[in-house]
Image (tube, helix red, strand yellow):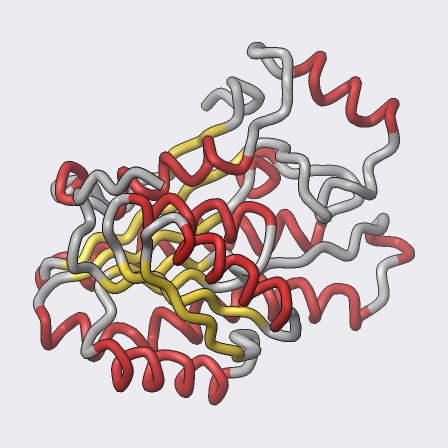
Amino acid sequence: METTGLLQGKIALVTGASRGIGAAIAAELASQGATVVINHRDSAVQAEAVVAQIVAAGGQAAAIQADVASFSEAQRLIKETVERFGRVDILVNNAGTTRDMLLLMMSEDDWDTVIRTNLKSAYNCSKAVLRPMFKQRSGRIINITSVSGLAGQAGQTNYSASKAGMIGFTKALAKEAGARGITVNAVAPGFVPTVLTDVLNEEQKKAIIAATPLGRFAQPNEIAYAVAFLAGERAAFITGQVLSVDGGLVMQ
């Protein structure tokens, strides 16, 4: 890992960072000099592997377990991060899940679980981190939404609603926090090969690729590059925005 130093001295917390996009974001932030907290719910072995990879490459990282869908657990996560590292400069709300089903057959539990994991976790962590960021009069909050939140997706009313909610949340919080030097932005990935897209069959994958002008899925590190940009000083005058990293799949 060649450290660029663009985020040197910053403390970053990435939720749901034990695999996939979250792990890629953590690695990229660390490569730019940030000390990164790898949050996970129940994937300790995977989280420690991400930490080990970052440390082996010359970065700094630590894993902290917390179910960020729980308000009290999110509060504990932020408190423990501040106690260990003194501050939180960057929060990436990445934790997420899917329970795809047509609405007619979707259970209440499937709806509630996705809304709680994807959207309420962003509320929980952002609320908890605002007080220390207000004291610092600086901070970056970056929410990982989705093209499904921009355009909707059949069979994903719960997921699309949660991700669209994150977009509205991003814009509202950007207006609330801007006066304290805090920026709030969102990144909307297209389809990325992760466990969340493993449920797609080959026909669905081919249809998505055919609808994507760049003709392929994104790679996790391509999402991470966008997050790292928004986390840095070069994006200091950008707030309330949604950056689509989707190969042109959804054009507004």
